Structure formats: structure tokens, C-alpha cells
Image (cartoon, rainbow, N blue to C red; front, side, top):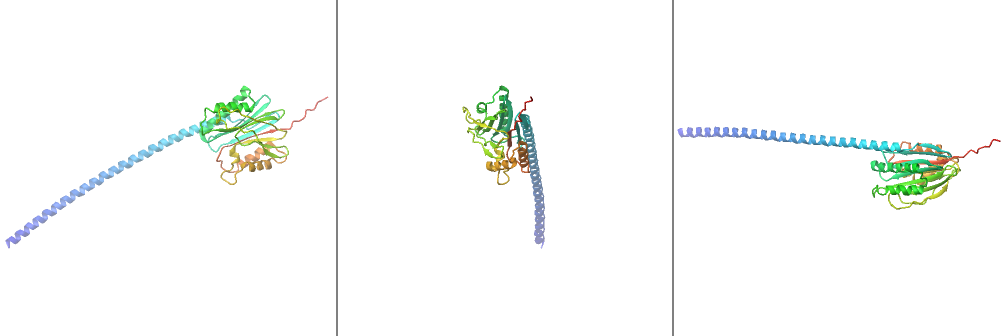
Length: 317
């Protein structure tokens, strides 16, 4: 009997000891788990904090870069605007009107008009591409054209050849300039036109007949360094309008079908000009069409010239 109680007491002691040890180890395991979870949480928080700092730094760097780009675009646009000529001007018997539309801050289309002696010179050009690089080349072209006025160069073939020699070493292989240079005598209407792979000039006669000129073709400016540009002699008669455009006009509008294309644009010009073409009416209709709510996807430039009828001078006896 006593041995039975002894074994029962021994069993009880062992049971209590095991339970105590189990409780102790369970408490230690729980503490270890809690500590590991806390450390893991701290690591996660540090990782999230570092990722947040990295994202903020990236956003700040992008913002600084955007500000720099906006500043560069603003500067490029300011330079281009300084070089844009008066939209309307009259040289004795010749009336000139032109404009440029840029969908972005700056672009590659440009135009210019000037007078050298009795010759009125018109320029229009289109630099391939968009943005600041094209705008810089377009500004260079406009500046070069302006120098010809001051040095007395009115021959469009010579002017094109000289401009090409200047542009050839400075522009990349992926870039070129299409252009037209027209020189018209204020008194006689005799003119010479040089086309460097640009869309053809459009002639609207006094009776409303319209045609695209077949000028002598030359390569784009900046592609063949030693090319001697050749031109075609034409006569601009009284009340005739000659219209020069960039390809952005012929491809307008890209968001709708069909685009203008040369035949459709010529039809529009014929309807806008009517049987008695007036430069102001044609330009007004063209501007209304271009500003009809369609967003431009390409640069657009045009310049038109009309030889107005001369009033005979009456001699007083």
C-alpha cells in the first residue's frame, strides 16, 4: 500500500515537473516568436521607408527635368517667335500673307519674306522631325535667309545653294530640310522659283483656274553638300495668287478621313478663291478651316503672294 502511494506521489511530481518545463519552454518560444515578428516588422518598415524615399527622390528628379525641358522649350519658342516675319505685308504691287501653326511649343516649319532691290523673296521650309532639334535648325534656316537680304542676294538658286552649303555639315543624316525660294520682280511679275523637294507651289489665276507648278526638282537641303540648285522661270500675272504650303497643310486633318492631299486642297482653294481671287478672302477661308476645332498633329505653315492690278497713272495736261 505504501509503495503504491509512493509511486503515485512520484508520478505526480514528475507530471508537475513536466508541466512546469512545458510551460517554461512555451513561454520562451512565444517570446522568441514575438521578438522575431517584431524584428521582421521593423525590417519591413525600414524597407517601405527606403522605397518611399527612393520614389520621392525619383519624382523630384523627374520634376526638375520637366522644369528644365519646359524652360528649354520656352526659350526655343521665344527664339522662333522673334524670327517670324510680319504676317501681312505689301511690296508695291505684291501683297504677301503667311502664318505658322505649331501643335507643340516649337517646331520645324518656317517662312520668311524680304525685299532686295526690285525683287521680293519668299521662303518656306520644313525641317524633318519635331521639337527642339527641328526648331533650332528651322531658326538657323530663317536666320540664313535673313542674311541674304542684307548682302543683296536675290537669286533663289544661288541663295539655296549657299544655304545648303551652310546646313550640310551641321545637320545629322536623319534630318533634312525641304524648302521653296521664290523671287518676284515687283514691277514686271517675272519670277524664279527653286524647289528643294518641297510640295509644289499652287497657282490661282485671275479667272479662278488653279494648277500646281511643275518646278525643277532638287534634293532636300542638307543632304548633298556640293549640289548646285536649279530653278524655273515663271510669270505672275495681275491678280494671280501663288500659294506655298508645308506638307502639314496637305495632311490636314490627320484625325479625320479623308486628309486634304494636294488635289483636295487645290479644290478647296479654288472654291475659296472663286472667280475673282482675293488674297485676303483666300487666307480668311484657309484660317477658318485650320481653326475649325481639329487638333493639329503636325506643324503647318503657308505663305501666299498676289500681284495686284496696277492703276494707270493719268497724265494731266
